[in-house]
Image (cartoon, rainbow, N blue to C red; front, side):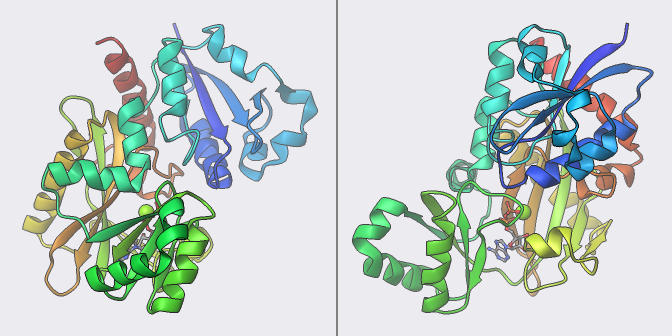
Length: 343
Ligand SMILES: Nc1ncnc2c1ncn2[C@@H]1O[C@H](COP(=O)(O)OP(=O)(O)O)[C@@H](O)[C@H]1O
Ligand SMILES: [Mg+2]
């Protein structure tokens, strides 16, 4: 019998558009001789619809106006247990952060990717730091700024950041993705503006020492015995990999394998698996590192539990380089979700 797979796309986060492109790619490439598909779109305002129309409309966003193929039964598909596995192709808040994972757990349907705890810790850059400190994983020095403290002690907080980190620093909303709300500050004025900007997206902000680094990413797949694909490297077209450089600037380059020697490639794969295991990940995650351009010191940057999933995205590409096709990768993720739900 064919397995029934709900493919969730869109969502309430700032990465809604990216999610639609990832989901369209999953829907176009998944093996339909094995699976019946139930695409479910979530609008930016959080409404759920089942959408049975053309996949191109998912990619473009036109599905929302396609009344003929859109039914408001989106949530019922899950609650009535019409499906065997949920594949949340949702990036960011209310998708990658443990919320959908919790919903699936409550109604007892296997869900692709890590569980509630792991998803929410990986979504929150500050908590990722706290947990990985316990495991002695090297990370850039940082200061956490919360909205309430900042209002009361702005001068003191700025002084602490300057003393502890100096310039340049990166300023990030703790819960963010696709570089939204992230900036790089080279001086106090930029730092103050950056904190103000990041606080628009989250009441908790991470200020981090900027590393003069190459960006190396590792695709990890598996439950109890995770494996790593061929590490890749990102060469942003700009000073850093911001939203525009990620999605709109064709001059940003992806290199697979990353420009490291054989030993370094093996070391970073091993480290990625250590990080994955420390965070209790399951299914998949893309583990991103910064490698200092002069010293080659490796810093963990962040862990994405639902990484970009278009056919040209790093995660599937790094598996392709390791000999696993996009189709096979989707099969594996579905099997891993079922396996984890069963024990
Ligand atoms: N400490 C840092 N040093 C140097 N570059 C950084 C640092 N932190 C972030 N960056 C740059 O900013 C980009 C986005 O930051 P990241 O933490 O990956 O957030 P997101 O979740 O939005 O991808 C990175 O891809 C990198 O180019
Ligand atoms: Mg990133």
